[in-house]
Length: 367
Image (cartoon, rainbow, N blue to C red; front, side, top):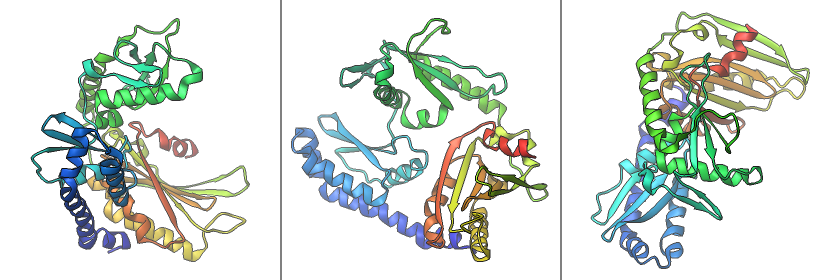
């Protein structure tokens, strides 16, 4: 059993569950105070928000919340990941442990709202169904990619950042946090321009996404691949710094016809103290890097839907690539990885949608 397996074992699971239970015990102890603060809308920061923020951040600094009254007798607390894919699984776990309280309703992630009530005010900017439209961008070479352009009537380049924030908040609320974070592959925001395709009211975006998702699911039933007998290639390149980049890649799987069944790409970066001249690891560090990769592989197996595409090493960084059927388990595994290995190794990761595995085109070209 590798180090990662040990830290993800029973004791770690118990510790995680205990953290959730302790949070809800704390919440129950103060819930009447919190309810009164929300209902009266008085001293909210001191009596509720500041305390809750502190407790949530102790568990996960990616936890945020929204709170308000659903009706005169029921308060709602929404725990949100703010659209961060890596944090969504932990929000879901936390809320799944929530107790039943008579005056409270607990929700994991921001739910979808009725388009008729979707109205966001940010300073002098207003975002609502009347001033937001969209059109799809079609790519014949990538027919299943959901790429949309959002058209905002009052778009100004000088207000670009504020407008982007407003659009993201609007769609987060209209579509729901999980749907917005997982259904749209690519999105750009612009104003009305000549020559644009016919604009579609944003109220129809939900139906459009449902239609596209249904088409995609029908064409990409989850397939599993045993990579035990696949062929691997060793690739080498020279960087602009003059240092080498070495890669070991499963070149067989890169031509697999069922890529769409594993649409989530995970990129793991392990930073190490290597040779100052070459950026490569010494023997001891090399063994530590091998242990990291092997330990992750013990948890994320190809036959279960997590394919190790390969790795590259250069400039004091080992980068490991995975294609995954879903994002929840990888996010949980890698959240604990930094605790399992040497403090000399700094581990971070990203998970994102890449239905066509374009992340790995560099290896196809190189091969």
